[in-house]
Length: 390
Image 1 (cartoon, rainbow, N blue to C red):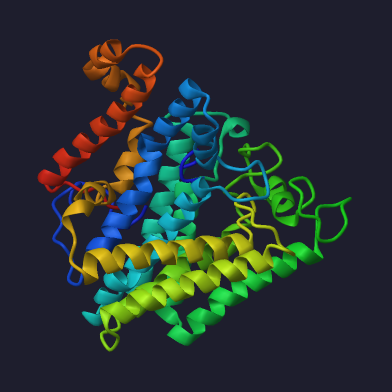
Image 2: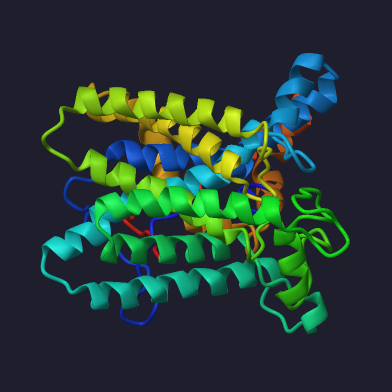
């Protein structure tokens, strides 16, 4: 979700004649909080952020402008809350792996079988990402963008999953740290030609240079792609962090209350370490810097701790149903914007309401109505037990 996720996913087989969109049985030990938090994440990119943008425009209030600004991406270094949406989704995709792939291992499926399935899912996501970027039309290669949000999720999910399948848990921690440290050292010791070693500007950093050298087609920022090829390296660590958390949550020897406390404590520690690393390796979503991975992992842990404690430990689930409906069809609602004119639909149903409210707040009301229309669409699919899985 480029404007959104760049800024899913709960991978399952894509629609075919035999495995088309179809009802899906809930897996054992499914965490209600996981679907709810995924839905909470997607809520902000399916139109909720527009409410704040419109409020800032019509009021001119510094308060609403400050909130609206948090739902944008910094041009390079820095962090806004909107930057959390994409890595949170990738982190949650990782959390689900021990519950899905891990369950298949427990049932006796071979690692090779599961690896082939994982590779297939990853490649499907890469293809869907290219369709999302370029539409269903033939374009010249110079106008074709290969890198995408879904592509990054597919690659990071696939490689993190392979590590999960073949590496022991202790080794997974080594992979997590090694990828982050290795990426940091590469960017600190190298640069684009003509720039000093360790240059971390858009023009001078080594990751951007690699992308504009080897990636065919166009890049999102001409000389840099926000989800380029080289910075998939630290993105694997984001997914791995989720996998490690998922394995931890499956551990029945620890009480749910202690699990929630550990998640909160680790989230705080990761965020503080990120701020410290930021002094040398800036928090930067565009480069997916190692400090960015630690900060977004920390914030993801804090959110998951809160959702897990309230929903799965205390049992307060009803309030989260709104988000669960979104989370169960996250890929579908993300892709829908390319195939459904939601503005046209919203205007068709609620133009009269905007006229009743009048200017300038009619645009705010219509932004709220757009979110409601999308949610009702997802609720209809939820009631029919129709879920799009990749």
